Length: 225
Image (tube, rainbow, N blue to C red; front, side):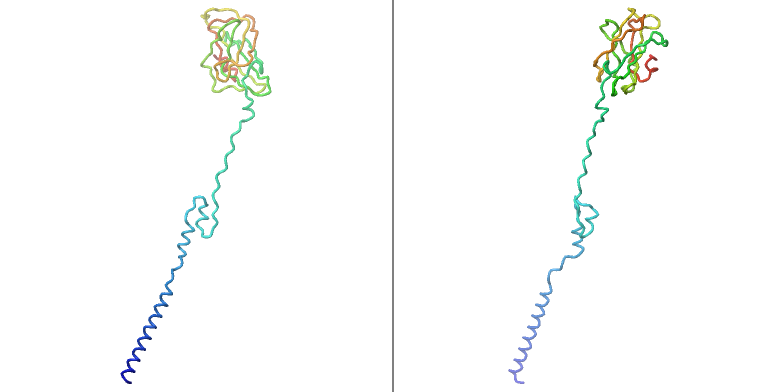
């Protein structure tokens, strides 16, 4: 082979090598595309916390997220019909009587009975005025009950009246004939409604030591003072 022929052959061989290398480079470059997101990354995205969704549904890929509903409002408490109708016991919805008792001596028993159709409350102590007295009889403070006495229709409450000191040491003793009973209001600072007007047992003797208890639901609790 001549020198020119060898040169030509070598040149062609070099050209072929370059062409093959270029083609291989292009093939490698075409295969280097961006990889698809990994399944772990997708799962991680679905599992991201959602504060308005159920936590169990959020942890499962493809699960439907249901927004959490606000709790239903609790209905406001309503007053019972009995509470709405509760009124103070007065001379208008009760019957009041006064009676002499044998023990303890120098005592009367005051009884108030609910004659209405709904219950009523006898608050505090009765305010007693004997005859034309300008000031109410003192109250036995130690006799205050644990709670307000409520009277259902037909039921009664009691108060004990000490007329005079047992040893006769009270001042301004006199015979009383009439008794006016005023009923306390809920505040305990005044009277309410119609008072009861009673005729006292004949020969009722009182002095300045006279006192009355708070209304009691039990008769014995009323007269022990």
